[in-house]
Amino acid sequence: MGKVVPPGRIAPPDPIADDGDEYTFCSTCAFGAVCLSGGVDKIGLHDLHCLVEHVDTYRNGDAIFRSGDRFNAIYAVRKGTVKTRQVDLDGRELILGFHLPGELVGLNAIDPETYPCDAIALGRVEVCRFAFPALVTLAARIPSVQQELFRRLSRDIGNAALLAGDYSADERLAAFLINLGRRYAERGFPRHTLTLAMSRGDIANYLRLAAETVSRVLRRFQDRGLIAVDGRQVTLTDPAALSEVARAILQR
Image (cartoon, rainbow, N blue to C red; front, side, top):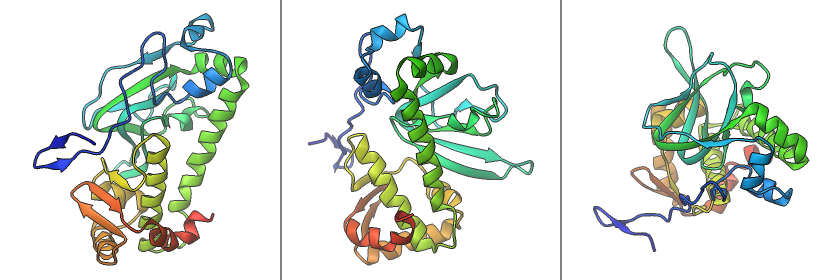
């Protein structure tokens, strides 16, 4: 059971252990399992001149990289949540995605060779930095690393289905919650208990909806018994029914 935190709420278990060191991969390493299955442990990475760095902790609002910065590394989220965004000349923000522990940030910079967006920490965030030339070397040594990169690029494209098509606000928000639960579950979090690092406004921006619409749909889902909302914690109380709402998007 999680520890008790004021005002008496039970904190959800945190599977993101601070267990990485010079010999072992972190529990949320984006490539740890792939490297090990390919016969290379963390010590072996040094022999391949592949440097994986734990960089400094970022605080809420800090930039991991900015749009226009020269691309030289891909980042893997180790703890916390990172949002990617673009800001137009009038200062308007367009949120492109949210990245959870074990997920990669910066893949969309490989072709332009500069980062096309900002990566911003939501709360306290820790990341690992993979120098891209070293990652290319690793992919040449372990083909499954290259396959993993392609898989993650494909997933990013698939997540764009939330924003494409003539879907209703209910469909978009239901799909967002189901998709987020699946991604949390892959990293050891409870699938149906989501602690949202992003604000309602950020969710609305990402789904191309008004903030008031997101709040209204959440209330409607709660009234129907599909979810329970307690601040930033959302519990999927009827995930099957919620998935049915999002069926058109989830089946794409």
